[in-house]
Amino acid sequence: MSVPQNPAPERQLIDRFGRVHNNLRISVTDRCNARCFYCMPADNVPFMPRDELLSFEEIERVVRIGTTLGIDRVRLTGGEPLVRRELHRLVERLVRVPGIVDIGLTTNGVLLGEQAQQLKDAGLKRLNISLDALDPVIFQRVTRRDSYDKVIEGIAAARAAGFSPIKLNAVSVKGLTEDQILPFAELARETDTEVRFIEFMPLDADNQWGRDKVLFAHEIIPILQAEFGPLEPVPSANPNAPANDFRFADGKGKIGMIASVSQPFCSTCNRFRVTAEGRLRNCLFSLEETDIRGLLRNGEADAEIADAMVSCITAKTEGHQINSVQFVQPDRPMSSIGG
Ligand code: SAM
Ligand code: SF4
Image 1: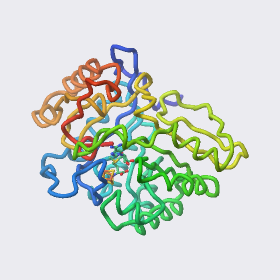
Image 2: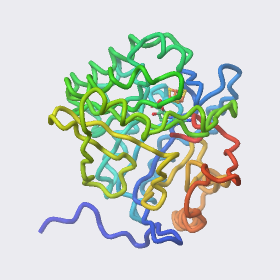
Image 3: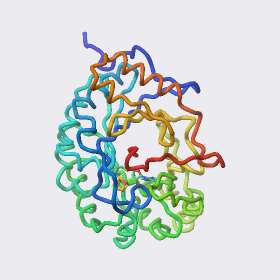
Image 4: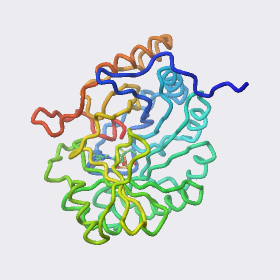
């Protein structure tokens, strides 16, 4: 008789609003080879000392403990996860953790040319590549780096390694990325590429975010419809997916909207986060964190760490307050939280 791969968890990460958390997003570094203006300061970035980052062994332990609480999928992020040395070794470790059924990675693609095949061979299942512009000049203005060609090379390497479909995430910024909408739609229609537009969220380092800088999903849709005709909503197979997907009426291609600001999906959120230096966060926008690196390094038992995870989820609030006057932006930017 075969042994079930994913045994029933002893406890679950259920918050006060009944949301069950099975999705752990792990930041492996706060460093990055880009400087996107919505995520990081332009220079003088105060990076964490390397010995403060969780080691691969520590991350694996966190994931193992997470599986006893119902975590069954993991996404690696950062900072730029591919600047963490030997990242494929971490993927290899996590693939072997009983109960983990899916491992994903979000990357800016700059180093994928060198690493896509290694990651695929290590067992990485899903890859999201962030690319906000198909125009190299706009790309440079967003990332403050000149690595457009490397990203295109990285996307080709990901395709060649067998990642399919290729998923691109594009942050939408008013006054900057409007002209990129139709080229991205063409790409989605003509190639095996899923493009998702993400509303710019208040997680920048310079506190320059404002509603007037968000290119909203409800502004993007009419631009697409004027060119390609009606967009039809595609029912999502996954009730926790943040994207609303649409199909073009002529059946060619699909496009997604992550309307985090205008249509928050907090009520179905199943995400739990751990920062590169081992702090649990129950929300991108939370103002409080739970340090588990101390517990890991002080020889505490798994049960203590599991309790810390449960307490962190219990404290989760109903939703982010971006649309309220009470909103307070977290004091660390997206790159150091882990997107
Ligand atoms: N460096 C990797 C990358 O760029 O894909 C992984 C980390 S990045 C923080 C993860 C995702 O968050 C990217 O798709 C990025 O575009 C998105 N992101 C960063 N700051 C954002 C913001 N202020 N609003 C919306 N999305 C943001
Ligand atoms: Fe780096 Fe990704 Fe943030 Fe851009 S979005 S600065 S690539 S971590």
